[in-house]
Image 1 (cartoon, rainbow, N blue to C red):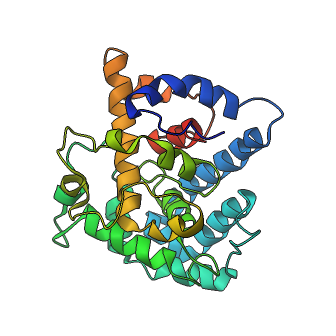
Image 2: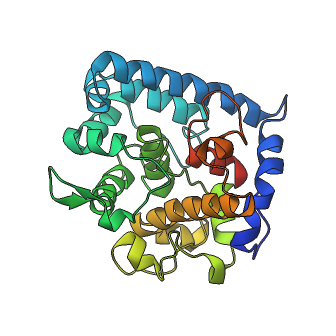
Length: 270
């Protein structure tokens, strides 16, 4: 169940343990998601090792099959989120610059500087710029799903970079992001504004409704803000618990396959 409307950001860190336990409860459909997710994470690691890089795994064709299977297990081949055929899915992934793919693969939350300041020395571009390009490409109709949109883009990007990118949907996490009190929906790293995190003024609000007309307001900037909120909740948890470190945060969820902040927050905001 999504968090209540007008939840203060600072209170979410205290909800995480209970929310994760609820998600992992034996016999629930979400517990089943854990098995599929762990299978994907293990397959991703093996595929990258065998191919020599994330881009190499994508080029082999195995990544498209694995990602598509995970998204299908998450219910993304139903309702209005029909997945494109595998050849089109492969084409959508291969359209992303492989050098950029490999650079981002080495980046995970928490960041020690905002994405708009994190430079790729080989390309002279920033993490914000590159994630914006990837988001727009994967949100395009016919790339991941027939209809396109923020759910397809965010979940596909998470599959590529599970320790960096959040997953956002219209029934659970997207509602939780929307339900965070907007006055407290603020960037991490003690930044004064979302522009300092994203690299540009946000077009519209940072956390629009994921339903109705609001779903059209979820663009790359809102995706970047959700990534920032994930880091901010992590920072708030650290401060509230005496700064025990990254490993202590990951220990909130010992489920196999949970390898980073985004997956923990996916359960915490489910």
